[in-house]
Length: 301
Image (cartoon, rainbow, N blue to C red; front, side):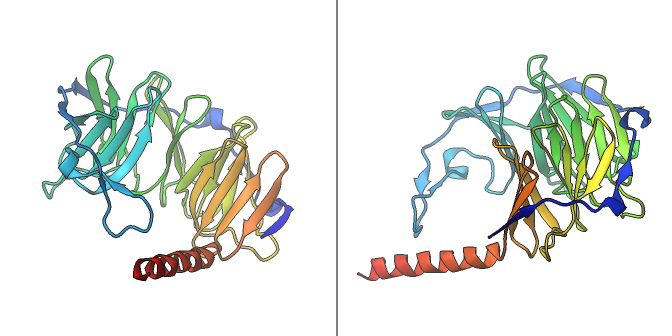
């Protein structure tokens, strides 16, 4: 583990005036939300041959399907769980199963890849094939905005976050970032964060100061939304921050950066220092192997 000061590549600094980005309306089609199927969930069962206490919760307990693509907890403490066969809201006793996602050309339901709750309590559901759905449970309505018909170009497994101002940010594989204002259903598009980049901006998170951090296949970017300054984090003493696979901002204002080949970096935003954990994957595999060996020896005894 190495600790060092965080440095930026000033040669790649850019400036974007977010207020001058053209704002375009999002066309939603709205319909009445059908009453969900409500079933009492069965008790979870202990997973067989597990080395630790793991409980399974699946179709035997009333859950629609085993393939889970996204999860979130709403402001009421209820869990939303998306599967290949439907979207569920779970209160710990009952499952409410919603069936509003349109099927794709194969007949299967479009896959939900991300969900969030906005400041009005509406649930935003992001699918790569059928666009965005917005559930307004208070009004009993569901709205859908198709991507292809409106020039959006989103991808599976990209981030969707809501910042402290209530704006919704969506990352893409090759088309930059989309900013959605849920108050008036408009969006702005940032096609490129830096000159000559390929538009990769898959992973997003917000720090305690309201800056948006962007993880790309070529590095880590920080956007100051107030000033419009965009900075690129420099590779630290040979430790590459390229090929970012995930970002997370914790309660202590630290940014956790997962990378494809260089493990995990933890950036303390307030101190502008980074803690770099090298070969995280190798250490994890070694630890798992030791745990498996210990469990086998205990079973044989």
